[in-house]
Length: 303
Image (cartoon, rainbow, N blue to C red):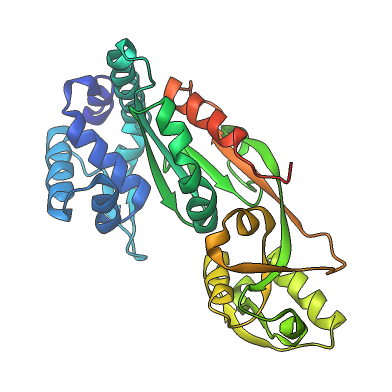
């Protein structure tokens, strides 16, 4: 039995503060991102991981040509053990907080920026009113994170996962309807004359990008005056009066401060499914169960 195999069997003896930085670098891939999510500086992350590697006698992560850090064989050997320590640490924190009338714990939720900013954050007060000791870490990012690497506890996406296998559970939250919107400052008589705000070539396969192309063909190929990379930026440009585009109906109509007007009669049915992704193989903490139910109850569809 190697030193790393014998040590991995009893990682409870190690400082959790060292183990959690090992997990952070594994999940984030860079010291800068690991430091950001851990709310410390890069020097602290490096020092803690070095101390753990010295105690175990082998390097756990090595920098690759891409600039990201990947697990060594030794790191891979202890990963499962460290994740179990993490789960036990979370469970202990929740158990200590059971004397409270509310749920205690931290839940990390990754969602595309639009969903984070327009759906999750506005609906936080209701959750926090009932569970003031529950902490949500909201990460707005469009990339498909790896839940199997514990990059987040939960993820909300516009598409069902194409990988992750049996390790990922997917639950449909609803169908988010889209419509054409322009700035409310635009006179009704001028709506048809507006140019389109569309997506760049890298995002041409997005459903809303393809809907825009269909409407452009239908209406004499009005040009795209501006092409952007994400839904949040498109909405901002519409609000500023640069043109019209396709945006989620519910959030745009619900928030009058956005100064958006709905353009009627597009002739297309435009909907995108919203999915909740979670771990299939790990026992759920009470905090995660509560957060999942909160997400399920949010108004994803027109009801």
